Image 1 (tube, rainbow, N blue to C red):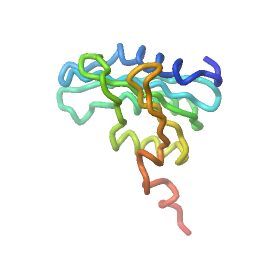
Image 2: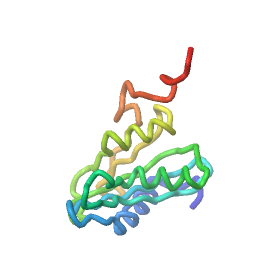
Image 3: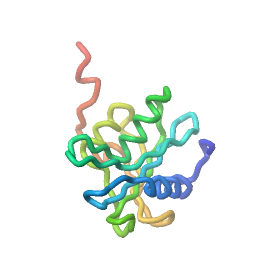
Image 4: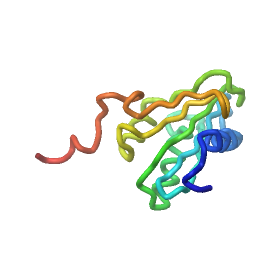
Length: 141
């Protein structure tokens, strides 16, 4: 996929990623498609665990896959989710995922929250996580 990928294509990719979700406990499937500045797309799905704490969200899966491949610059992410894989509401990333996004993305990073390829909201990271804790707070001044 090229960096000229449309929002609809990115959303479609997130829906495809959602199919791989491993959710035997909640039944709530989530898919994410993360677009890098280099034009590559990394996907993620949520993966649950019986002890819950090791469970990882789709958004973090996509980010960690990308970072493990050397990517550090991101353009946007599309996120979809629903019980049994049926998407009927806008799915918003959890606080932990928003914090991971803030590690790698600026305030204007685009987050697409979608019900379908044509029914979606476009938010910025700052919309979803204002006054965020970022690496700048750890730098000695």
